[in-house]
Image (tube, rainbow, N blue to C red; front, top):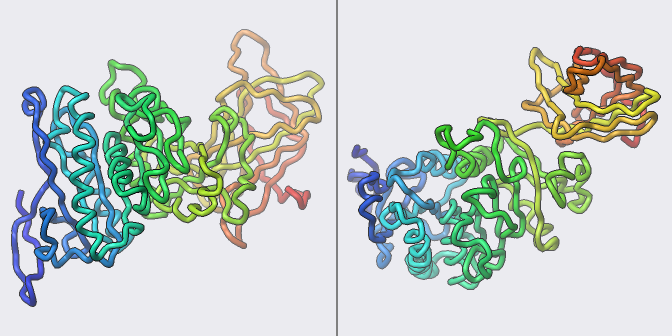
Length: 448
């Protein structure tokens, strides 16, 4: 399809066809494709209509403004040859958020092949091509204003490009950087934190197509970095091989408009994060816990001082992916130790949010404060009621009761002066598998 576009040629408004991402098919992949790199420019003037750029003459592109920041989008392996289904949305969101130049690096010729290792070999060649363009841009562009967003193999292409430019480009965002072909490699043979002034990486498929180890100044591990909610769990299900892998792109897209922010928590492991051991983020001072994605650049200076940070968070199975995190403290007065799981619901303004804390069987001891992390599927601005259900998962034993002396809930998302403070309830009896609903009251402890 050819779209009409507006463009400036001197003082005249003209119309010309759009240049589009290369559309190939499985036949091309079976035969194999030779590398060809095309650079498609998008700006707010031509936000839905690409302009094929030359590597040698920028004067033909008056819509390109070297004084504005430039963001490169670099895709990865394309075994079927089709264009990425996320490409247009990512481009559009970036241009809505900020007045920049967006350059889509189309290396579908070279990425479309059934021989994955051929595509891996092409990554350095693609990086050399991008480097040549950036060297030409340097006459009017600041390297620190360049942001490279690389997906899978594109993450390592970004790294090679950054290394070619001695790590002087401003930022590299790696979206589930590819693992096969790069695991166990030295830093010069893959993306690493020295390739840009700031490198952030998001891991969503580290057990199959992605990279497990940290690569940047901050590495985000969504839902632990492996299996993503809503994705197939078996090889016999559709989308099994790419759902987890490409989830990284959709999480990043969600972060751009800043209406759905995922707060992340630096921690030594996903287990410790789920156990509620890493919820303070005191090392970040007043900045608080870093936010996933586009706006993590606000934490750059602190993260550079930390050297390397691993941060964890949970998501919903579809957009909006962001969840609302609470810290829940439970004190019981049962004589014996109780083991089980909790399901908590928040009610307010006609809405309901739910968190199920079932990653392990919880250990409740008499007069001992048990701290829990609860990730709710949506944000309830003002909680009016709370529902709690206790379960053990054991159908063969008699039903148990959890005698709660005190339960406290604290929203971990900063909301300003009008935020609802910590909520408490005292003396609640939970019979197994029976939901109890109550109205919470403000907690008495001033230091909570």
